[in-house]
Amino acid sequence: MNVPVDRMPKFAPVALFGYNRPDHLAKTVEHLRANLFADQTDLYLFSDAAKDAAAEPGVRAVRRLAHEVVGFRSVTVVERQKNWGLRRSLISGVSQVASEHGMVVVVEDDIVTSPHFLRYMNEALRFYTDFETVGSVSAYAPPTVTAKAQLRPGDTFFHYRVNCWGWATWWSRWRRANWEPENWQRYLEQRGAAALLARGGSDLPNMFRDSMEGRNQSWMARWYYNCFLHGMLTLYPGESLVDNIGFDDTGVHCRGNVRQFARYRASINSRSDTTYCFTLPVVVDKKIDRLMRRFWDLPWLPNNQFGQMIRPLYRGIRHVVRAARGQR
Picture (tube, rainbow, N blue to C red):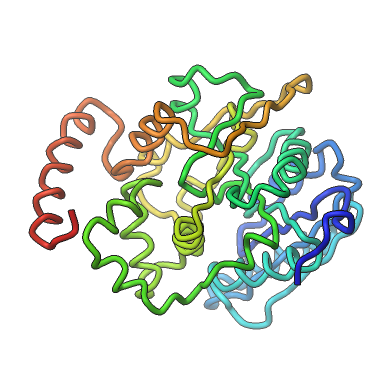
């Protein structure tokens, strides 16, 4: 069903997803609770069940913490009885909250927020309610992109890429998604399709393929694929209102070289006098597009002189391989 605008809550509810990291979750909750309008916001806290015995102590600690959370208009704890995995748990949870309230703000357990995160989210959700080509709102902004584009904290911009580090959407957009598209392989085999899908970042086509073939738990790649097919863009702030504290080798889906992920860390805009200038029309700026692609392109390469030297070589080799496969 669609929720009429006049029946939407004054403040969008927050869906918070946790697993087995109580210390991370405690920081996330602490920052959310410090937000302006937190006491007028309904919080839904989703706790997935343990996948194995090693995860059980962390899951129990997360659930104890979840039932002690205060400082919000209401707190609803949803405990999964079986391990659903990130993708299924998040898609189901977002669908549950968004279908009931018409819109939802989504946070995972390793995201710390600005005290004005909820204000930005709610203002953006209200402003773009009737703009169906806006698929989601991101609170994260790549620091090098906004610096090089000389964006001010109150500026906003659009891009093809969706983001999962503190974001929001409307049920009218989320409900369009087909999470198990039957013709995705045939589409990617079409000439130029993979290149179009890579407009949001060169990592996305493979991330999407791996998600569909069961090699990762990425819901984001599938959400991006659906936004891409429906021509929906994501709104970004001129300065990040969130930071990801999960790049410490504790996450299930983000293991590896901690130093590699340092480029994603962002300073949070905590200024109370920020007035957001929401962008119209809903289009992607060419300069910012180039900066966003450069930031997300081949993120596994080191962000140093060697990485900058090797990227053009890798792109050339990849272009030859795709041309041979008819995927140019």
